[in-house]
Amino acid sequence: MKLYEVAATPSCRRVNIFLKALGVDVERVTVDIRGGENLSEAYRQMSVNLKVPLLEIDADTHLCESVAICRYFDEITPNQRYLFGRTALEKAQVEMWNRIVEWQGLIPAFQAFRNLSGVYSDRETCISAWGEESKKRVTEFLPVLEQQLKEHHYLAGKSLTIADISAYVFVTFCETRLQLPIVGEYHHLSSWYQALQQHDAFL
Image (cartoon, rainbow, N blue to C red; front, side):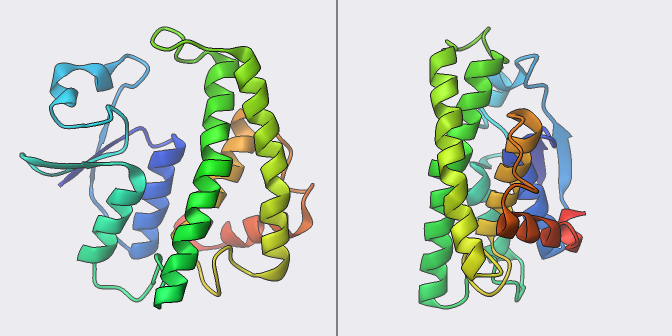
């Protein structure tokens, strides 16, 4: 089994934090995204979306999309971490919050970065106005997280879940790539973020 990745990217960080929380290790293969290795015919044969991370289960079986990879490892690894929730309601709440973080946070953040930085302008059209609008949507979403974490220690319940991992990756990306000051600006969001940094999976 191999995990094709660029470790510093948000989607790969999400998988790596999840695997660390589960206590799972897997062989890693670094992909040269900037150089276009993911666009090669060899990679195309393995990946539907031509992105990282990509999990090779065997020569004929591959999984892309970070949450799908996390779900697979969660199912094959005996554990009581319940990173996708325990009860029917918890599982639904985790799914709900993880999707909220993805659609209202991570995706606009990615669009803001790619369109403002032009990092992949050699392979996609970058529109600065769309980058600015996406960044505005990110800032409008932050109070949603702040309010939820004002009332709960974790985003989707009483314990760490993939929703927290997704949100942690989102906040880190915003601070480092979009230069959005979050930690220190939002009290409850900051306390949650700093508490996660003490967790073994985030070290």
